[in-house]
Length: 129
Picture 1: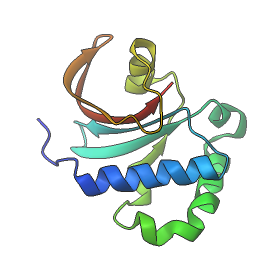
Picture 2: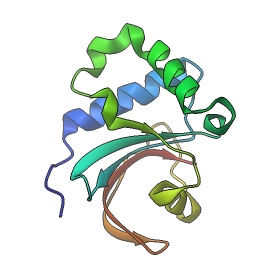
Picture 3: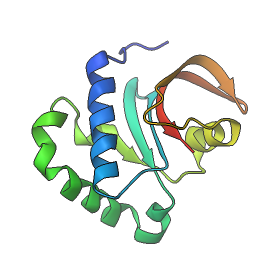
Picture 4: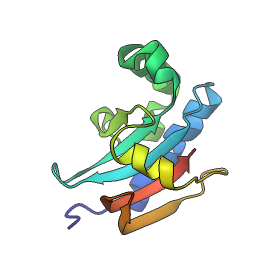
């Protein structure tokens, strides 16, 4: 059961973050809010294949650089809420193998779905390719 709701503000801030990453040329393949039932918190998962080539520290560094000039636009989004994830692991990998969400921030909400054998409590998908 989701104890912390996903707010309109979180959705808007996540969208701005993804837009900014796109503008900086980082263009994540997948971006979504996913509720972590173990921690009872939301994580904004950002994923692309370059993560494997560059490694997470370098990729986080590039994200920080891309977001420096828009920090005020992202207020309310703790940096530890953003998580880089390889595209084919965990819930993200299962979602990607089952569906594609494309277009300029399609905004698909999944609540209480089983995807490839994994229960997705709640998710908001901007992009999933």
